[in-house]
Image (cartoon, rainbow, N blue to C red; front, top):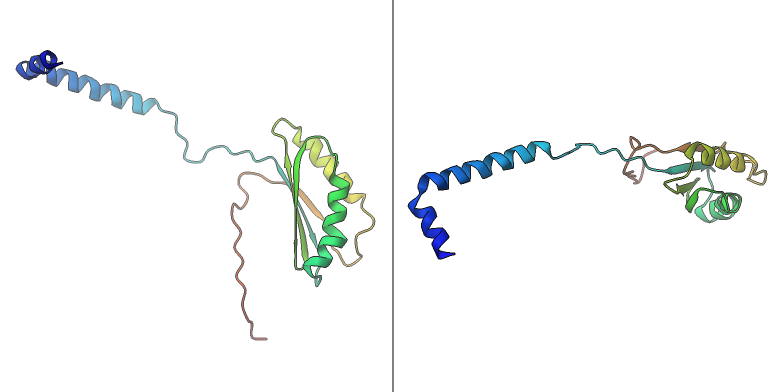
Length: 148
């Protein structure tokens, strides 16, 4: 090792050429690295939102979310189902398997949700849609006292 170091110190032209070669190779490699600013994220998730205005979360859970969960259980192509009961709204996120036929699963989910005839009459029409990567990533809610 000592011999190599002493050779490079006595031959500065060779040292500079080696450094220039490594620098150019690094620049050429850097230009070929595939980079995307916005990667293609094709999220296989179906969203179901059922407005139930004026209902408490507990009532939304038992009257809406549980019934939707029962209907969706066993659909081919579904990885998992997550329900959220909020005040005045039931939100169900259906995560699909990556190799599932998304259009077919969406149609199955839509048909099963439309077949539920035991939802309270106060609920509005369920909104079923396939989420895309351009949809909102984060949702922020701000609450506080209002002057009415």
